[in-house]
Length: 98
Image 1 (tube, helix red, strand yellow):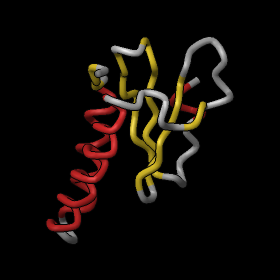
Image 2 (cartoon, one colour; image 1 turned 60 degrees about the vertical axis):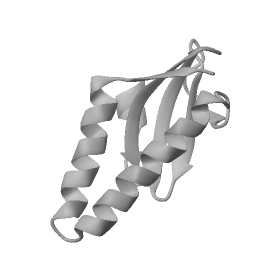
Image 3 (tube, helix red, strand yellow; image 1 turned 90 degrees about the horizontal axis):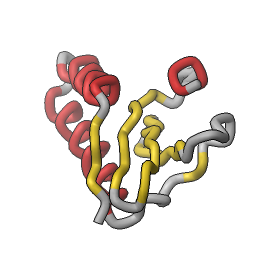
Image 4 (cartoon, one colour; image 1 turned 120 degrees about the horizontal axis):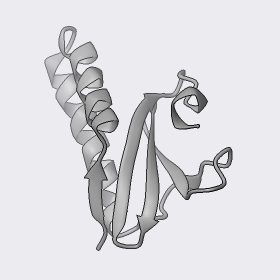
């Protein structure tokens, strides 16, 4: 089983998502954050679950989807996954990943 490592950027983005939603709907904020977290946990046993992020060719960057969010991660090995960031689908993630 792979170990999941959260970068500071990814942890901050998840917190920002929560903070954005919580003022309107605390229950929804919890559900979204929990859903993203649970989706990421699938990577422990399926590190290559997501599709390859093709613009990056020198590292194995992949992404999985949860609702309107794209979760970018790096497969360092079968035993180590690094969560790079969580991005709303409307964002241009190229600015953040390249």
